[in-house]
Length: 501
Image (cartoon, rainbow, N blue to C red; front, side, top):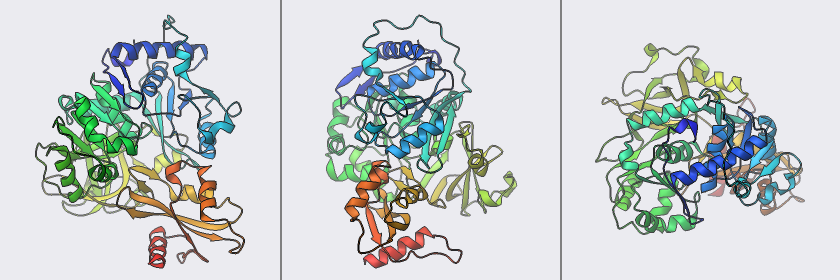
């Protein structure tokens, strides 16, 4: 039995591999993995990497590790070799769990840096689970690390304990009724807070059925309406970028089984919001606000009939919001009296029981965003007279690609290591489908004997995840800088866009 579940677990359907596990099957598979991991002497708080996702095996691996008080490090399966080495060394990990095969990018690391293990194959050898008594689950140990950025330079890993995660799931019961989530569908990445913590584990660990799809898979998006009808899906969550594709590529579901749809991780405009309502045949479409550091969802609407308003979030879900004039850099102590009046735009802070333990091995970063119980989001917004939160912008440099956050400084470090590059400035550009795409201004040392952009893209892809490779490249003689000699990425983006026109 998985100790911390109290017998509550649902079913999983792996759409891509056409496989379905009952609650009993999940528990048996988890127990087999526990047996092997005990033989490998996996210790409490040991950082074990899972480098696969969006499949049925992922959840068995995750639950087995948690049953041993180990800490799971979820990594993007398309990660580059450099990123992976940085994470593995930073976490002192000796084991990485994969499913089926190690990606071509990482094949050179097999047998050297870390031990790669496929628990799916190993579990076949164990007909019975372990009879060794397990240690009691310590809810306050680090249980999950999700890297939000900085995986090629200085890693930024958000650490959650089972206590903070359980707090999140208990909070959600009061705001996202489980009655709507009888059959939940997820096509978001499982190394992503929104997809893993809220869309998958919240319903699954409360006895509901989970349909797991490949992440951002074009084929699945084209077939989404039919998939919803086939499984009689009652709930799904996604991001604006996915919905922009769905409305153009997939026929609407005909069964009208959807009872609730949530959309988060990026700003949702009123027009797209209405398109989602039409496509899903339900007015119960909630725009959610969530950040990995606070366990994802911390606010949203709870109305049966929603009238879309661009940027409208709603009320706090087990969270208090505070709007301040200054950001974290200017405030030494946050107190309620510093909150701006209703309707005044400012910096958003959150107070919730599900806040992270901190950034792994980065006390400097943790201290930069925490003031007592308040977490600084880096987002801009205001609270209306009716108490509902509205998002209007952000102050962070991060690029938001379909809900996945990318540190531009991170990609600069990679590109500038190429022998032909003098300097680079990575920035985000608006995109109708993904929200933002990665672009870069680059200065080559020699403009006669320089690599092609195609060669540069291939070179960068060896070091970073696929979605981080810049899609648009601007070759400049000089990159505009501020009077202090620094990049203003927004101004560089504007300059490059004007050149393109």
